[in-house]
Length: 431
Ligand SMILES: *Cc1c(COP(=O)(O)O)cnc(C)c1O
View 1: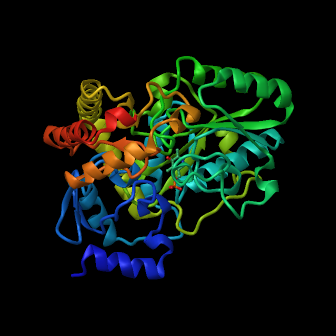
View 2: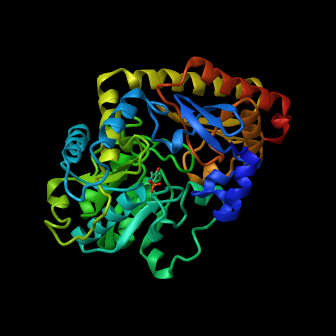
View 3: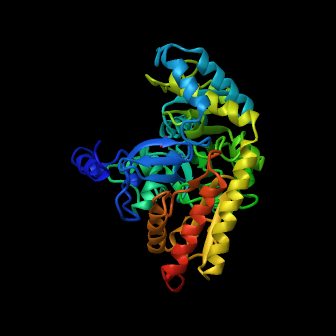
């Protein structure tokens, strides 16, 4: 078998940056990304036989860890029955019913193949339903890589320090208003100025792509109130938070019901999937019932549906969220305690099993706060994690995740490597 080094060299020759998605190149933290050979529970194994505790979890989907037996079994069963039909299958109905039952605001859903497609389609629907063009998004919010949503985006756009992306026509972002996250005041001002033209407000109800940033009390409620009052569509991008922070998503956790919800990640069990849904009256405007066109050759793919159903059924029937909260608490408290002991300023933001440690800042409520953090210090800590057999997301601006497959020993390994890095690395003086 080829070594990681050899694979990286071959990859760099035939794939830009040697990757299929930019953050995977480790540009922000330095060092060479491991080439993965296999995965098992909370662990990844690289092509050189190295074993890592995985806090990336494919950037969110693997809430039960890698290859949980229920999902493997469901996929095996489905393989013998076919992998794409071009017709509606029972599995789609079953997953759609589960989503509608779990999410308070969702009466109908449409399946797509990625989170990007879900947000793109939800905004098309919002614009059609309102007859308006403007879309409000928040700085550091990432909603996939559709043209109009790359303005001041989080995730890889933030990691690489880009203002947006080349190749996006001016017209595509001309109708995007970017406001600071967690600022209800800025939203009210935008509505006071442009209210008649705002079709939608799209928000990560818990931000995850500028690192993890929870909504301040009242923020989501205020978005709900003003959009309803001004006839705009409130879109919760729950691609990351859906079934991650609670079985009913962030909307259940915070008690705020959006008009449209975007889903992905967890609901596909690690296979490519997305979905958007909402009230019947809105969703009936989607083709073939209504004039909003949106389609997909592989949408509702039976393998993805089977995996998603298996994950959701396990999440609903067990005590997964209790376990995730306990593990998350241990990780968050451990990191915080280590930082205090080393007198290193840092903010540990956590909602359930989503977590970010921002170094060199005391508090992070929005993207400006996040960008004040010490990314060089983060890169050093990241290398210490890597040396200790811990794979942490390779960017200050990506949330780390936990799964039910993580054990206390996995958490403690990450905490003690962190403590060692900030104690021994001379970070205290530099932060
Ligand atoms: C990951 C993510 C997306 C994009 O999903 P893809 O499947 O990568 O296209 C959109 N919104 C949020 C909040 C995400 O976390």
